[in-house]
Length: 252
Image (cartoon, rainbow, N blue to C red):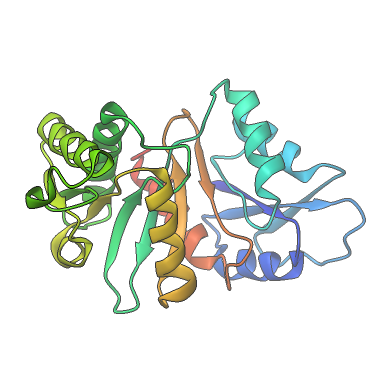
């Protein structure tokens, strides 16, 4: 199998991760800016381009690679081009997160423009359950809201999150965990935030303040496998390994 990964800022770190993840059965293709002077490790190949984000997405769309990881390429340029190539107005992502205590779970939405409707929440729940099963995580899905059931009537915005979570849980066979994320994380393999803003804040709080780990976010509304990643990642070995596992299990 062949996985492409973007090498923007700190390209050497990405190439080193590729070398650690690559094997006789897994070729890693690194997409670098023209002029980079690095040596490819064993089972790693290089593609040089003036626009590596374009080359990465084009090769994924043309099936020249089995999956793509954003790596350290700029988010705005890469994801904007990805949307244009696949003809979608927005990207829907489900992240694999890990708490500081080692508890892993799939989490969505992580983009501020994602997960605002009942149908989107239900779709995230169903996609997340499928991924959790493939990764051996609990298939329990918990939808969060902005308060407890007893808080209904305190504020219209809170009421809406509760009603939406109840409806999405009914449609997807999930559970409404109210605002109790600390309980949900104990036994749920999938957690769905009330909306994209709260989801983004939860993600950032866990990963950047709480000592947790983000293992990458799968984009689930395009037919090919693209894994979004942060340029702040200390290493990309885990993300590449996760991507290879998804390809091998044919679960995307």
